[in-house]
Picture 1 (cartoon, rainbow, N blue to C red):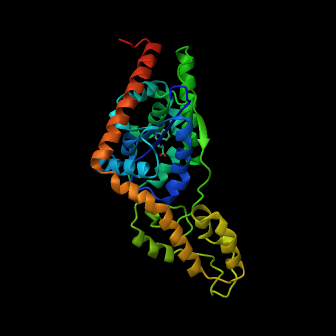
Picture 2: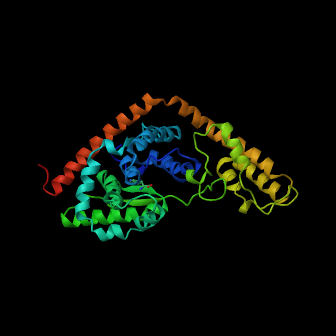
Picture 3: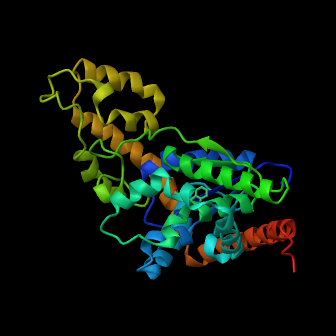
Length: 329
Ligand code: TRP
């Protein structure tokens, strides 16, 4: 296990995972867990940067996220699944790194500027929010992670983590901190039900834990090729919002038939949705069966074990980091 390269990634506990998360992030993690020594963290301190007014709400979300991960196939035997706030070394390293991070780097960070505009309703004029990338750098650097799977939006943060590592190594004449590489997740493969990005806040998502009977009306409501008004009109799968779902969820052998049927108008959107519903059911049912077996105690055990393993690693690496700056009292 120690021979393998290390991967670190984190997710904020902000709500149920949906299919967009699954195909965008989790599928990637599933591939990585065989090959790397993976640390996957529920980053509840990060969630507090925007949800500081209701930390109780954040904590309530933690077990659900672990349950979503494990029912999706993230294996606690293969990776370390843990809660950020259970490993205090994240806070210690974040503090030390904040000493060497120039304010300008944080103020210039595109996600900072963007979020301040988007979340104008929330008061996020806080030190914690500005320092978000420092905490994220601490998460990654604490585990000497070689690689970090992230989406496009997180690339500036990863670049900052590399710059902070470089600055630390330069200042203290060491090569202790590793500059992490990004494992870029491909652009969202699955749009929301209405064609926009899938997001709970847009009301266009299918959660991994949605009961099957609740999904049927959602599928019925999906937008298809808007030029196809009648069943007798030929359709175009390349502009239909349903087709990306088939590509990910339906038996590939059936795809040519679906495409043909749409283009020559031999079958309609209702038929197409019926097939998709079957594919969704076949995909989600085993996951939901696994989910039903993961009770509160199981989640507690998974986190207790993961927290312990993460803590052991972090305590050792933090001792080395303190040593590098002469603070190993
Ligand atoms: N900022 C990430 C996000 O919003 C979450 C995160 C926190 C993270 N720490 C991390 C991701 C470390 C990768 C590595 O998605």
